[in-house]
Image (tube, rainbow, N blue to C red; front, side, top):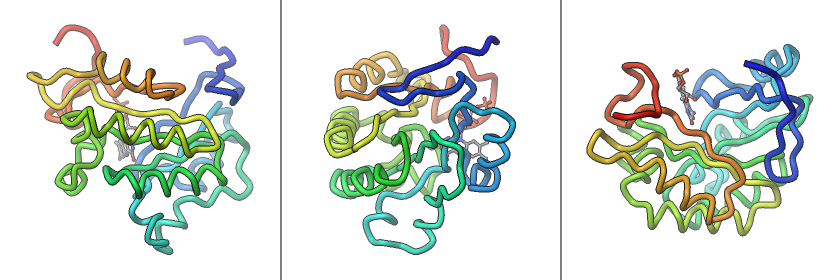
Amino acid sequence: MYLKKLKIGNVELRNNILLAPMAGITDLPFRLICEKYGAGLTCTEMVSSKGIYYNDAKTKLLLRVEGEKRPVAAQIFGSDVDAMKYAAENVSDLVDIIDINMGCPAPKIVKNGDGSKLLLNLELAQKIAEEVVKVSKVPVTAKIRKGWDSETIVAVETAQMLEHSGVSAITIHGRTRAEYYSRKSRLGDY
Ligand SMILES: Cc1cc2nc3c(=O)[nH]c(=O)nc-3n(C[C@H](O)[C@H](O)[C@H](O)COP(=O)(O)O)c2cc1C
């Protein structure tokens, strides 16, 4: 691993060490520590676009970035185009990068069509990416998984679709949704 500067859209990062978004972990104090020890980019945990849309107080707390060394990204999730647009437009006033979650495997998330479930509906995923890019005032990135399961490996077509939609960078978690967090993360042959 070697350090180099990185640019995402028009946002310049000090280096290529990026903090992965983690629910319940990458809160404000955790991000401040990572920034202190040199992270080039930090990210909030996944934040519900519906929570933002309905002005939920607890959701808003997840988006506090006071005192942080910039740049900082916020990750939003959801499959309702209007809620995602609203969230992107408003959250892009607070942070330097908006990341779209297309990888969360949790049952309570996928049952609503959110997170990794979008990998089974690339038409909707494309609509979300395009609309979020259109309204966001900052570069938009996306985090996907390699696919839904071993029969549905869609990382390459999803990445191409996201690139065409104007997304500035893509993170790929090298597991399928079916693998959850088990086995070794890998991108090569299945
Ligand atoms: C506790 C926990 C919470 C996570 N929350 C999120 C999240 O909010 N958004 C997201 O995109 N990924 C989330 N992830 C996935 C990580 O960002 C990362 O992609 C994944 O752990 C793969 O990296 P690893 O192989 O080093 O574990 C989470 C992972 C863990 C372990």
